[in-house]
Length: 499
Image (cartoon, rainbow, N blue to C red):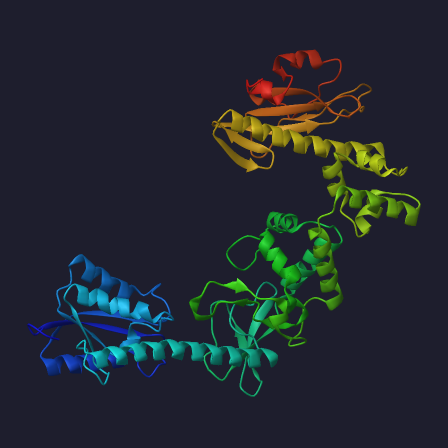
């Protein structure tokens, strides 16, 4: 420090944890002694407690120091730092040098109070600082390697390495001798470094939900999002202050901890780098580390089913699969399709615009398929197509839209519901059932009417609910369709005035 001697100083202290030998309190005491010996008045203290030195992210103290210096608000002439590593143990040593340079650039000196050299800019001092910065970075790399090796050993011994337990499981603390000490609640940690943590099954009601999830996935063949929707509709809590999602369901179905296997090193994020997934060959696994809540057989069935669903089936492969079912069983039915290792009935209906169409292309018959089943799947396809067409019309009309349910929208402030109905013969003549009541309540029902053979959609109507007070349903028939003609449009495009 040359020129006019500084009279005021700021302190910068940092420690990753308060268990370190050089805690922030210890650093501050040393820096105050140094300031007193130099006749410096301490006017500001910048502190980062419990902050890693690998990055600057989250280090409010250092960020505030740099902001004050660069904006001209700094009312001190020197920054006192315990040693070179307090700036940080950055893997790029030039980053540590930059923060010191940022101070010196505006005339503020930096003094390292516990280093054996004076920070005077001499060639020797420059070399020593470079070595110290490299040593600080290497210390972090070596520590990371040691911690990882310890985590591997503990995982191989069957102990858990950080993180939450997950639905249906709980974290149990074990003493160094293996004696259970208690179950940790969410957010709690073990209080002794020598203690270990493992999993134990959670409450019976959560275990029942896990078994239901496997049943819905394997037996009912519901997708993850469908399982989540059902659990949420039943008001089943996740215990995480958030509803069920497809991601949470997937965790239950794919994480090996549910069969008692402890897994570590699924992903890598060492030295605060960007997290990336690891090859499964690098995973550290210990089977039968604790009591599982799902049988291995059931878990493997779910794993195989997920691989099957993720496979991209070509049209020819799907049709060949139907022919194989015909050869094996002598017939093809929806139950046989869903029970076979092929795409679901719904997948066939969506891919080929109906099951009958898929059967025709495959060249097989299925006499057990009822007319009602054919109509139901054909109506599902029409509903899907009309929903997509309605979304396209909304986009073309540049309307303001808010989706409330899969078939209900608020369009320019007006509540609208799409309803596709089949032709029935329940009242001795062809008729259609139009439901007006709905949750949420709507202003208009866009009614898509199937033809009398239920082969395709024949007419679109915009039914104003307010014109039918007290009506829960409408039953238009071939005798009364004329009274609804004033609501009729040939297409959805015409309804929006686009065609």
